[in-house]
Length: 331
Image 1 (cartoon, rainbow, N blue to C red):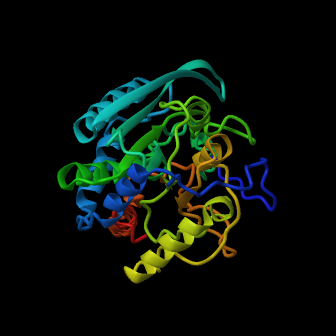
Image 2 (cartoon, helix red, strand yellow):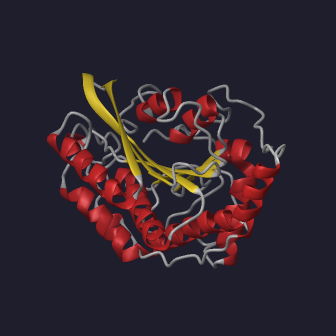
Image 3 (spheres, rainbow, N blue to C red):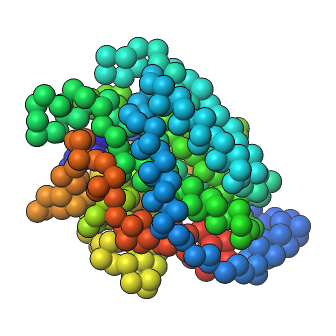
């Protein structure tokens, strides 16, 4: 993924979100009251299963658009979400990236409780990078990476959360969106193409959610998740609540109270085009000033060796608790 840390946000976003809800009918009030009084226990996130989900993706090989591995992964993820959610929608589109033109790409949307008005959006990208421009070996810089963390980890966590919801139930709508064509831009262009496509043409006309969470680079050893600037600016209420929740759950060594600056990631398009407050949980821990990404980022070190089950546990447990607390009206 492209993670250009900037002092000023490079794109004009919507400055004010409407957070009110309609209560002008007794029926609406009654429904809202029922949803608020429903209580569900937070199920136990299984980091072993999340790890296995990442392993499975990596087993396909290099998964950038245009490869057979990419096509095979789409089939696999579509089948998995079909088992775990109530409805699956795929969006096919064409993309240009690097030296590729008119390549097939697909967003995959898994929907739980499609008739519920109270909804949360969970997202990650599944494609991997065609080049490893940061690799220390110049001879390897034009070769594709496996993307265990960058592409695999967010999806791995979301598939486990989908399984938990399937087995334990929930009373709100949950939309899992696996974005394609996120990770193959260069020099500020060609990033986050799948989320841009979806945000302009959502799977449901006038799609809305109360808020969204994007997972990216969420599986590496010693990850640090700061309060990314665009997330803080447009979804700050949820950022602060989730980081406080992480602190209460003893995961403040992962969810750290620092502000690394804005990054171009899939949440930006969701904010810009759908006006949904969306936050990005992303590892930005490399540099001394805490404005960077892991040493493995866009290198061939981004493989299963970098994935740590403790990190998966922290992210998975915090996000699962967030979803169920939101369901219970206690977030």
